[in-house]
Length: 145
Image 1 (tube, rainbow, N blue to C red):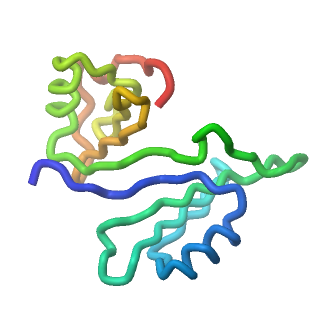
Image 2: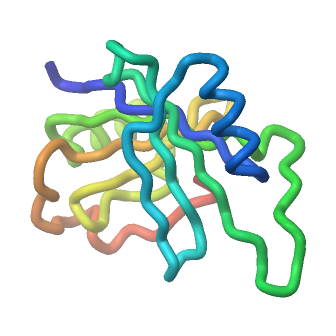
């Protein structure tokens, strides 16, 4: 299988209220990462028995002197994520097809592209990152991702 669905990410302004909502819906927390350096928390949820189809909740901590961010205009929807067999191969295929690589896989691990309707798609190398390689290693980000 060359590609596998991983998760859909949504940004949340109130992690506790959002977790309570998804608990009522029947989703269960699978894992959580609190990243102090980046001031955010990631929580992965799934329906029992369907752990491969996950939702990633991203909670950006409020500034120490401010209020939590209020998401509007679709900023709360983050991206779809897929694990791929060869990140360089799929990025080349997309680029050859006229798709802009918004965040090139400089690290051999992660890339972002957008659909024609600007939905962000994250591509993650299955297993370990590939060794950095050109032209990817020196490509700059383009636009938003």
